[in-house]
Each structure stands twice: as structure tokens, then as C-alpha cells.
Amino acid sequence: MSLALQITDLSKTYDTNTVALRGVSLEVEQGAFFGLLGPNGAGKSTLIQIVTGLVNKSSGQVVVNGDDIDTNPSKAKTHVGVVPQEFNFPIFDRVYDIVLHQAGYYGIPLGKARENAETYIKELGLWDKRDEQARMLSGGMKRRLMIARALVHEPDILFLDEPTAGVDIEIRRSMWQFVRKINEEKNKTIILTTHYLEEAEALCRELAIIKDGRIIRQGTVKELLSRLERDSIILDLATELSSDVQNRLQAQGFEVRDGTTLYISFAREESSITAIIETLKEEGVTVSGVRNETNKLEELFVSLINEN
Ligand SMILES: Nc1ncnc2c1ncn2[C@@H]1O[C@H](COP(=O)(O)OP(=O)(O)OP(=O)(O)O)[C@@H](O)[C@H]1O
Ligand SMILES: [Mg+2]
Image 1 (cartoon, rainbow, N blue to C red):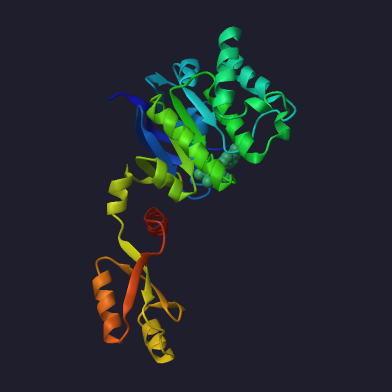
Image 2: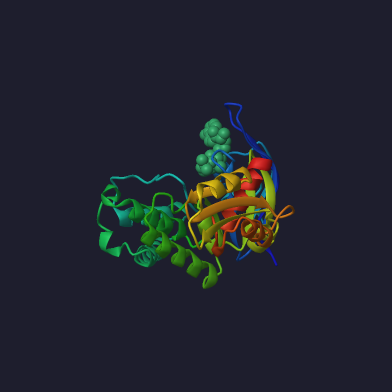
């Protein structure tokens, strides 16, 4: 399999002396759906901006579809499209012109540029809005405009930097569908950063978790989840707890949500759901149901971020 992206020992220190990346190495295969997760300030956007040529790296090597960004910068740029975290189009320009001009920027001849602009504006459901100024679009439409713009030169790799931040559920789902489709049907490599772990779990096959400019974990979603060391569960009870029992359970680490709901978080090495149900039985408490507190990936993420 050939690589869409090969990053070796990448570091970045901004002029302000902020160290954003500390020796990041990363390989993404062509056709992958890859997620980059990490808390605010971890270095995700910096990494994307270096790969797409918007920020200069301090050291390390970046190869995009076989083209090194140092020795072959303009070729490397043609391979990638980016949907940045912040809106960055001229707001008084028409939707159509914003997409068309981007094609021009990549040197696509006018006829083909017009054709592609139409194709992608339509695919993103903005054709009705093509003559409007970008400032007239809703937030979700603006995001879709940035996706159309990122695709107009038909790159193989699409970077999406928090594409669904501030987007409502319905639009989020339709954006998911769209990026899944271009990944599956057009074999585009998708590299996505997100704060929504549910989004990473739903879309990505592989993940890297980045913190303080370092990759602290990497693997398939499945592998990462299997390393989850803690479980958090909610227990629904058959009967209301007496205050006596409530106090005793609280002393053992249970959180009483209301008279008939308990919450507990435990290390897998130390306990299990069966053992917990057994403990409750000894207190005369019958469990009628067990649920997961949070999304699994979210638990993993939180535990990794805290332990590293
Ligand atoms: N242009 C800049 N000049 C100076 N420092 C910067 C610049 N851009 C980012 N930084 C700093 O680099 C670090 C990494 O920032 P970056 O934007 O890459 O993080 P991020 O992972 O994308 O965070 P978020 O999830 O908040 O978008 C932060 O400490 C940030 O303050
Ligand atoms: Mg960012």
C-alpha cells in the first residue's frame, strides 16, 4: 500500500517560542479515514497547516503522496485539499466565485474549473446559493462551501479540521455521509480532527491521539478501545434505596444519581460488573439494568489525556 502521508520527526516552534509539535511521526495509507484527536492546543491545526504549506515547519520531513514538501512544494500542494478550522473566505464574494477562484489558484484551466465548481457546489447542496455573497450563508452552509472549495482541484487527500464544530446534528450527519461517500466511492484519503469522540468513532478507522505536540497513542479504533482500562457504568435499580444503604454505597465509591440510579467507575483490573452487582446484592439491592455511562472512546481519551 502506498502512503498518502508520511511525517517523520516533525517539530514546530512558533516565533513566540511556543512549541507546537515535538517530533511527530505519522504514516497514513492511501484511502484511509484517519482521525487526529487531542485537546485544545495539542498541535493538530499546526500539523495540518504544515502539511498544506500554510505554516513552515522547524524540522522534520513531510511527504505527501510521494512528494516532499521541501523539494516539491507545489506538487505536494496539489495532492491536498483542506477545510480549515476557521472560516477564511472573502465574505463579500459570491459562493460560485469562491470555489472557482480556488481552482484558478491551482492552475486548472477555466473550462474545467467551471465544470468542477458546479459539480462540487451541487454535491454540497449549495447550487441554489451560488450567486449569494458568502456572508449570507448559515454556519453549516459556510462549512459546506469550504468543503466544495477544498475539493475543486480534485485532491487525493482531504484534511478536515474540526469540520462539524458548531454545526447542528442534522447537518453534521449529512456531512458525515458526504465525507464517507468520497472516502468509499472516490477513495479519497480523509484526515479529520475533531473534539467529538462520537464523530471519530463513527467515521474513522484509525486514530492518533496527540497531546502537547506528541503522539501519545496510535492505532485502529478497535485496538485503542481494547486497551481501555476503565469502565464506567450506570446501574438501574429495581427498588428505591434507603438512606442507610445510600450512605454505605457512597462510602464504597458509588455515586447515587437518584434513589434508583447508581453510577460507578472502576479499573478493570480491580473489579468487574459481576463483582459490583454481587456487592449490591449483599446490600439487598437488585439491579434491573446496566448501561454505559459514556461513549467508550471518550473514556479512553479522557484517561489517556490525564495519565500522560
Ligand atoms: N500562529 C501561531 N503563533 C504562535 N503560536 C501558535 C500559532 N498557532 C498556534 N499556536 C500555538 O501552538 C500550539 C498548538 O496550537 P494548534 O492550533 O496547533 O492546536 P490544536 O490542537 O489545533 O488546538 P484546537 O483543538 O484548540 O484547535 C498552541 O499552544 C497554540 O497556542
Ligand atoms: Mg485546531
